Amino acid sequence: MSEENAPNQTQKTDKKRNTILTILSFVFLIAGGFWIISLFFDFNNHETTNNAQVEAYINNVAARATGHIKEIRFEANQFVNKGDTLIVLDDSEYAIKVKQAEADLAVAEGNLHSMQQTIVTSVSNQDATKAKLEGDLASLEKAEKDYQRFKNMYADSAVTRNQYDQAVSKLKSEQAYLKAGQKGLEASNSITRQSNINIEASKATVARKKADLEAAKLQFSYTNIMAPADGFVGERNLSIGELINANQIVATIVLNQKLWVSANFKETQIERIKQGQQVIITIDALDGKEFKGKVAGFSPATGAKFSMVEPDNSTGNFVKITQRIPVRIEFEASAKDLEEVKPGMNVTVDVKK
Image (cartoon, rainbow, N blue to C red):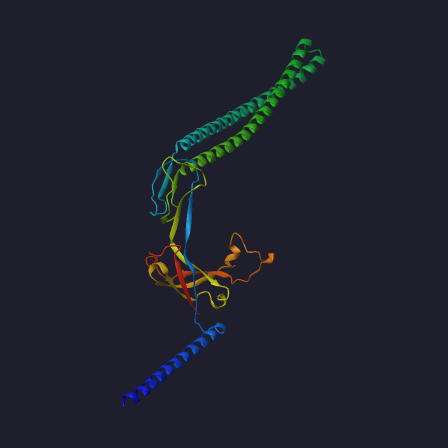
C-alpha cells in the first residue's frame, strides 16, 4: 500500500507546485501589463525628483579699502550678527588723510571769511564814496553859480580878470573832483561785484572741501569691515598683517534667515506642477526627515540656458535630451525647525498633484 501511495503523493506535490508557479506567472504578467500601461498613461498622483538641493543667500563680504590687516575678529563657521566687526585694517594712512581734509576745510573757510570781510569793507567804502560824491556835486553847483555870476560881472567890468580866472579855475576843479568821485564809485561797485563773485567761488570751495572731508571720513570708516547681515561665516583664509585690496572678498556669510529648495524637474513634469501646490521635502542627510513646503515659482528658462556653455544644437550633433526646469520650493517650517538644514544638502521633492 505504501508503494502505491508514493507515486500519488509525488503527483499531488508536482501539481500543487505547478499551480503556484502558474498563479505567480499570472501575477507577474498582470503587474508587467500594468507597468507597461503606466508608461503610456500616468496614473501617479505625485511628481517626484531627487535632483534638488537646499539653497540660501550667500553674501560675499568685500573690502572697500586697501590696507594691512590689523585684527581679525571671527573664526571659521562662527555665527555673526549684523554690524559685528569682522576685520580691522591699519588706519594710520586714512587718519592722516582725514586731518589733511580738515586742514584744507579750515583754510577754505578762512578764505571765505576773508572774502566776506572784503565785502563789508567794500560796501563801507562805497557808502563813503557816495557821500563824498554828494558833497562834490554840491560844490560843483556852487562853483557853477559863482562862475556865472563872475562871468556877468567881468562882462560889466565889475571884477578883475584875476577874480574871473579864479572862478573859472574853481569850476573846473569841482568838475574834476566830481568826475573822479564818479569813477571812484564805479570802481567801488566793480570791487563789490567781484567780491560777490569771489564769495560764491569761496562757498563752492568750502562745499567741495566739506565733501572731501566726508569722503576721507568714509574711507576711514571702511577700515572696519563689518558683517552686513546675520549668518554663519564660511572659511577663514586671512592672517594678521596680510595686505588686502579694495573689492577683495575677505569673508563669506551664509544668511540662514531664508532657506528654500531648488528642484530640477523634467520638462515633461512641469505641466502637472502648479504654483501653491503642497510639497513633501525629504532631507537625505537627516535620515529621511520630512518637511512640508509649497511650490513658490518656476525658472523662466531651463537650467541649460543659464549654464556658462549653452548647448548648440545647430552643429549637427543633435541628441534630444529631456531638459530640467528649476522650481523654487519654500519651506513651511519655522527657522528653529530648520536649524539642522544646511544649504547644499540633497533632498527629494514629492509634489502632490
